[in-house]
Image (cartoon, rainbow, N blue to C red):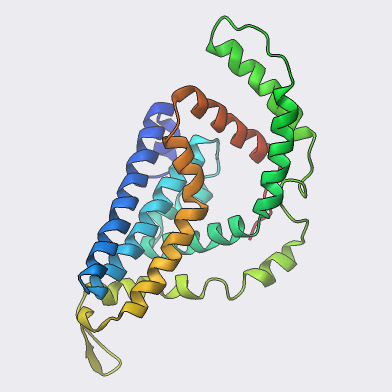
Amino acid sequence: MNYDLLSKLDEQQQYTGIKAYYLNSLELKNIGISLAQQKKFGLATSVVILSIEELIKAFSVFLVYVGETNPNIINPTFNAKNVHQSRLKLASAYNFAFGFIDQSRLKKTLNQKKKALSNVEAPSFKNTKELMNWVEIQLDILVNSVNQNELGMPLISEIELNNKFKGYTDWYSKAQKIKEKGFYTDYINNKWHIPQNMTKKDYDEALKYSKITFETIGKPIKKIIETDELRRKVLKLSIMKISEHFKPQSL
């Protein structure tokens, strides 16, 4: 799997991939929870970490689905030298970026704009194409009427952003090794390590970061797969318009 292949898939195939990866990530997380209830904390920790990696696959396909055209953003999920570590690093970066948005301000702005748009009288439409053309015009008006700050995206320099990002990645940078400890017996630092030695504390920490990831990058995916086709098209178009208008600064 890579960007070239994903970009050649039609919209329905991309959607199918998003849904498959997302549902599998949910199942992995639930299996991890079940294993923890059996006090198998090593396996539980590792499977929960795997759920984060699987969710990153879903999100990468989701990004292509909503118009991402840069292979360098997509390919690290599938083709990196250490692909597992790469996915966990991406989870860290995406969680930081989403967490940096003022969600309450964003929600307030969108509710205000939604209320204003509800007063706009929609014409009659002969087909879905006419409807989507009208929706696109309304979205252009909406996006162009707000600034970055109103969307909960703070105005901040790249240097300030990088400084805030330092230290945020601590657990994610260790997660691959933690996952391996939960799966395999090995001789580490002059002693034998077995998965059964891992504790509830190890599991609780992994579950915490898994929940954060599902709450942040998992949320737009969940919306996409739980809605009908027409609403999905509108949501996809909305995300594309906002993404085009507000290019995120690189980490």
